Length: 350
Image (cartoon, rainbow, N blue to C red):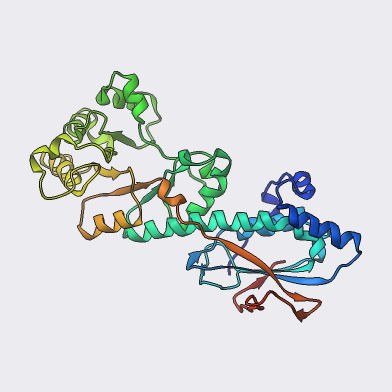
C-alpha cells in the first residue's frame, strides 16, 4: 500500500499564502465575490495535464490545502501518489468543497505539481536511458536556490542516485555528493594532481575520491597522473570537457566524428589508458551537456561510462497542469471540453 508524507512535515508561509501574496489576482477576486455575495456552492475541482509523465508534488499540494485553505476539514481530496505514471488528460486529483475556501491556492498547487512533475519526469527519462548506470542530479546551479529541497525530492522520485547539495538531500537520508571543482584546481595554480592530493588529505576518507581531469584539456594524461598518485584510493575520474574544446588525446584521431566536448572517443581513450596502466578499478564519470538523447547514444555505442552527471537538461520541457470546476452542488457544470473525467485510480486523502 502506498503511503503519503505527513502534511505537517511541509513548512509554508501560511499567513502570506492566505493573504493571497502568491496567488493570481483573479482567484482572489473570485474569493472576494463569493464571500461578499454569501454564495457558497460546493464544487469539484479536477486537475490534469497533457503528457505522459511521472507525477510528483501531490503530497506537497495536499499539505498546502490542509494548512492554508480556510475550513480545510470540510474539503475532500482524492488523489494519485507521487511517483505514479500518468497519461495525458488523466485526472490526477479532485478537490471538493467551497471554492471560497481554496480559490487562493490554485496558483500554488498547480505550480507545485508542474515543477516537481517536470523534474521527476525528466529525471526518469535520463535514468531509463542510462540502462541501470547511476545518474547524478547536478543542476542546482541553474536555478534559484529556494527550489533545491523540492527538486531533490522530485529527482529521487524520478530515480536519480545522487544529488549535489545538502538541500537536495533533505529527503534522501544520504549526504550530498561532489567532486573537485575547477575552482580548486585553479587555486592550486592549475595543478590537478596537487588539488586532488589536497582533497585526499583533508576530506573525510569515507568520501569517494573523484578527480576532475579536464582542466588542462588533457584528460588521458591527467587521469593517469592522478591515478598514479592516489592508487587504490581513486574511485573515479570525471570528464567535463567544454563543447568548444578538443581534448589533447583526440587531435590525431580527428576526421570521422565530432571531436569537441566529452565525446565517445575521448571516453574510450581514457578507459584504454587507465586499463593499460593497471587502473581498471577507476571508474569514469561524465558531465557537461548530457541529456536523455545523448545518454541513449552513448549507451547504444557501448561507450565505457560508469556514471552520468546531468545538469540543466533536467529543467527543460515544462509539464503544465490545469484545474477546472467540473461539478457544482453535485451536478455536472464545466467549461465545454472539460467534463468530469472520473479516475478509479484516485484514492481518498484522509
